[in-house]
Amino acid sequence: MNAQAAAAMAEAGPDVAGPDAMGSGITESGITVTGATVTYRDGHTALRDASFQIPTGTITALVGVNGAGKSTLFKAIMGFVRLARGDIRVLDMPVGAAMRRNLIAYVPQAEEVDWNFPVLVEDVVMMGRYGRMGMMRRPRAADREAVAAALARVDMTAFRKRQIGELSGGQKKRVFLARALAQDSRVILLDEPFTGVDVKTEDQIIRLLRALRDEGRVMLISTHNLGSVPAPCSSPLAPSPSF
Ligand SMILES: Nc1ncnc2c1ncn2[C@@H]1O[C@H](COP(=O)(O)OP(=O)(O)OP(=O)(O)O)[C@@H](O)[C@H]1O
Image (tube, rainbow, N blue to C red; front, top):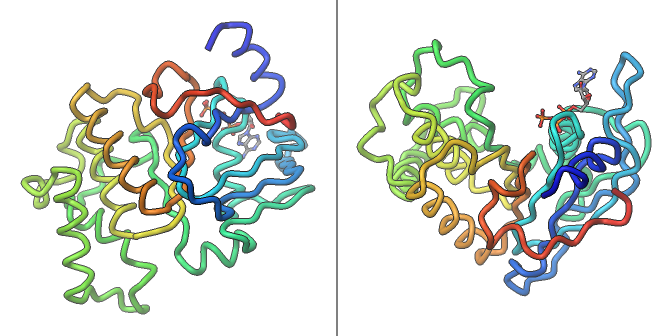
C-alpha cells in the first residue's frame, strides 16, 4: 500500500482487500455491511456509510491506517457499538443473534490484554468454550477435548500449563487463535494476526486460515499495513465502492 492510498484511507475509512481470490467457492452470505455508520458519544463519526459483502469460505483483509475505523467496524460486527445508521448481518442474522449463538470469534492484538493477570494458557483457550457452558462454567469432557485439539492445531500443547504472561508475542497470538478454534465459530475476526510474528508462525497461521476457509468459515483480518498480510490474503485488491 503506498502512502497516497494510506492517506486516502485515513479520510475514507478502511478498505477491503477482495476475498474472491482466496475463496473456496462457497458463496453463502458471511458478513454483510450496508451503509454502516458509527458515531461515538463525543460526536466523532468513526465509520461512515461502510458497505461490503463477504461470503463464507473466504479470507478478507480490512486495510486502513491508524484511526481509519477498523476496530470500530469489528466492534460493530460484534454488536459492541451501536450503529447510528445502516445495518450489519452476520450469516444472514442480526449481530446480536449471531453473538448469542456464539457464531463470532475475535482474535485480539496481544497488546489489548493485561498480562499481569495470572492465567494459564489452557484456561485462556477454555474461555472459547464459555458460550457453550452453563452459568457455572464447568468444563465437560468435550470442552477439554476441544481445548486440547485447538492447542495442538497451533502447536502450543507443550505450553498449556504456562502462564500466558510468560509467553512471547507470537506464542500469545497462537494461544488466542487456539481460543477462537475452541470456540468453533463460523466467523472469525482477527486483529493484526501477522504483526510481530516470525516466518514460521506466519506460515502456520496462513495454513490454519486456509484450512478454516476451506471448512466454509469467514475470516476478516484487520491491518494498517497491507504489506504485513501475506500474498495469499492480499491479492487482488478489490475496494468496496462504499469505502
Ligand atoms: N470510544 C470512542 N470514543 C470516541 N472516539 C473513538 C472511540 N473509539 C475510537 N474512537 C475514534 O474513532 C476513530 C477510529 O478508531 P478505531 O480504533 O476504530 O481505528 P483503527 O482503524 O482500529 O485504528 P488502529 O489501526 O490505530 O487500531 C479514531 O479517530 C478514534 O480516535
